Length: 472
Figure 1 (cartoon, one colour):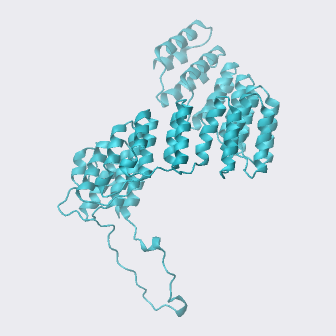
Figure 2: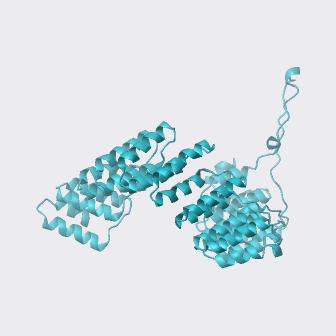
Figure 3: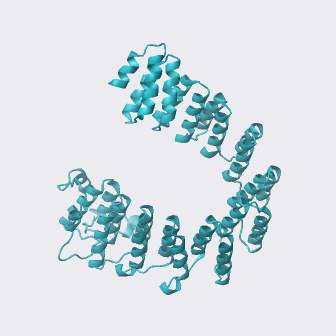
């Protein structure tokens, strides 16, 4: 079985090199999707009722490719290349599905040199490719900040027996914008007709959002007008990014006008549309109007979402209205809108800043009972809160739960905990934290060690065990 060969592959390279991929080159490299399998025939005659089987679907007619399943299970790129080569030695002739699977795996591990070698083979053997392969690679190049490589790949898609479309064009626009190449992105948009690309709403949305993030409302509006002139229908996203920009700028009336324009043109606002307007109203101190708008959205047939409650919760806590915030939480539960980690973290952060650590800890417990599990930020806020109020022993309890969840606090918090525990004579707890640090290969800087050692030596306590931990 091939699965058993994964762990016992005859070739297990210690380091991924292009030499590994060179082994795939063969004189007669033809495309073959799968090995043939012997057909299973019945040994006895079937009854009349079972002679006519159901017509198989298209998916059932396709024979599986074992290598694909094996490659998807392997995490190590070196091992994936070995298995790829092993299949080739067994007579399996690779085609687009297996090539693309390995290319994705190598790109994810950022071994782009090996990726380009495989792309060279795809060109050499005229293997027909799908555009989705290049869209994924363009995105991986963007994440690795290899923008020029992404641009080059986009222009070379045609050489891979594949046609590029608006989808790959939009992927490249996103990469350019995300990497700060705004002028290049705008130039790409302007030259789309030369490349035979028909712009869609996503293309315009990317560049409109780019200009808005740069604070250039005039350029964004000009592009929006061009979108209408080209008869490209705006989406809710097109309107939302403009509504959000106007609200942040304090022009809530302008945002409302754009909101109404969206409704008139037959675009149904979503929960985000309402949330943006609500946030704008709250920024002007109009909480009641924002809450009224949230209930109006229900009347208009738009379902309430957690994002709408989040806007109101943020404003209430900012104003110190905890009673109202707690009532809003109860209201959410009554309406069967399940609070998420963001809502709970907002409440916990408020309690910790106010020094109400007991309430913060209760909220930490309540959220877990409700099926919402804390993240690293949740634990850090509670541990920091206990340090702030000098409840270091309680902080250790939360730290222990945090470690069990595979999270770790900031080093400043750890230092504060150790110093606080030493002040209370809790050397065992301080040693426990040091041991956990060692297990996770966490290290204090020199200044932190100096403060801890000085504090332990100048205080009236038994420090021999702690000093043993520090030295040994």
